[in-house]
Length: 144
Image 1 (cartoon, rainbow, N blue to C red):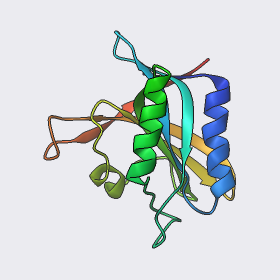
Image 2: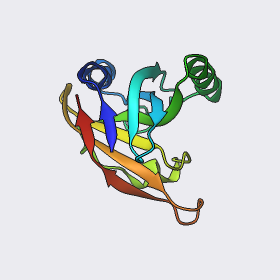
Image 3: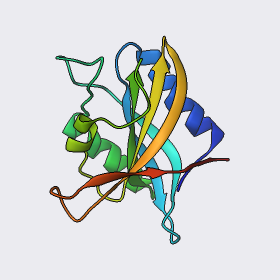
């Protein structure tokens, strides 16, 4: 389960609206709980560095990801997942999303943004023993 506060949830959905018709992207910071859930304490917006097809692909610059991770650790937060938007497409993972996901045990949140307005938001947890058998599992979102 992925646990988000209402302000964090609203912020990641708003990010998708602001970048429409391009995909937004960012990092979920927080902690892994003993019960297997993840609690998001903040999001870190990232720039989408894809210039070939930013309307249906995203990329976070590795230097930016390292900076976000370092700053999170200084506050006692871990990277617990990532988020991005799907402009005018469902909030379901694509084969490209799976191919480009590498953080096992982390959440991947996708918000469908329809005609500039955030619609459905879903989360998927990346599971598997390695690249050859990785898969996304549906993950419930709890908003408090």
